Length: 195
Image 1 (cartoon, rainbow, N blue to C red):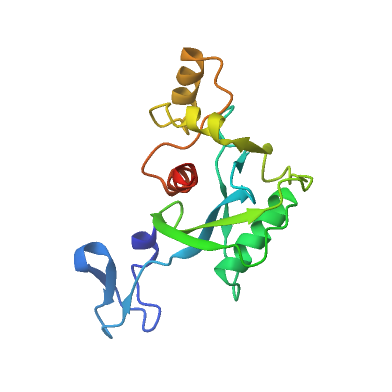
Image 2 (cartoon, helix red, strand yellow):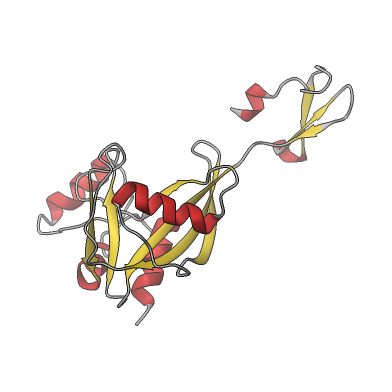
């Protein structure tokens, strides 16, 4: 999209050309350069204070039983830590523990043009959940055993047909989680590897 929308210079109106293997556009008139926009977003695993449970949620776009960590865009002027606290509050009604947000990693996410910055945080898992039904279908705390079993399912279970096949193969599965090589799964695996 960026390559199509950036054919002309925003400074002088001259045509632009792609340089640096298509990652930059340069104006043929004034030599101004431009790059694709990246919107920062946060993604976070929220764990119980004791570390034995993780909060996972299911959005409308996910297949049945497919749960993942919480994510959202960072607003202008907002720190990443504040974005984690705000998104968790808006989507689930939980207040995370002050000072518990810790950076884990990042992953480019080109849908549409984001960079996912990953964190973990803790919260009191006895707080009542208040789900934003515009964002989520459900959210709940899962224990280590259930999540570990879900990590044994192979394939791109975020796709409806793959999830359906996995659940048909083992109808007793209470949960599906994102596949390996996505930052959401990295957060889940990081939690599982603790303790």
